[in-house]
Image (cartoon, rainbow, N blue to C red):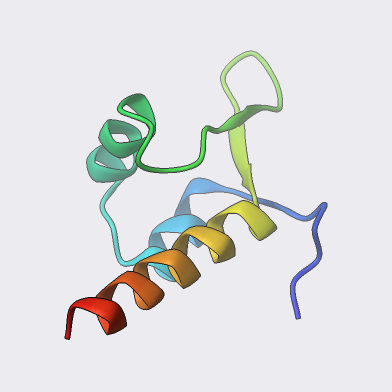
Length: 66
């Protein structure tokens, strides 16, 4: 169960998704991945619920193609 307001830092997002730092930022820039949330001047995070939802969508899409 995910906490809808829990904020994940980059390392956690990388671990959950299997994506590299550059892939996460590139996908976010094109709208293919949830946007980050500013936590400070040079600090960002992602809502856990958004990342988990993105993963669930990828899984569902792969099942419909197979």
